[in-house]
Length: 126
Image 1: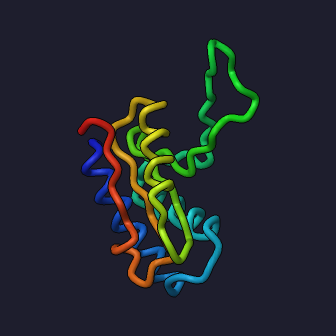
Image 2: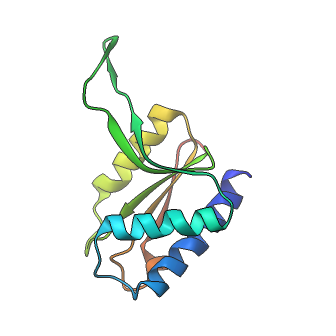
């Protein structure tokens, strides 16, 4: 599957999770776990809390970054459950995309009243 096909499945799955769990008000990890379940039901490969090593001047730092979800080995998903989205979340996702050389990331805020209003696409050279 390409990035656009995966993003459609992720988008639909996020809406289903938000609807089934009754909207905002839960912890980020609850939504993340439910989203993983939905993606697995759609037969999409998904890895959770993927370590992203950081190399600084040819030295691997001890504290790797953690990607919330890597979907289909092509799309990074960062889950949030907050009242306000901040630009730093998009910058963080773009950094992950650059470090992995992936092209597409989705930032999903399950804290939104309507989750489809809380989904942002972040692209790295698409």
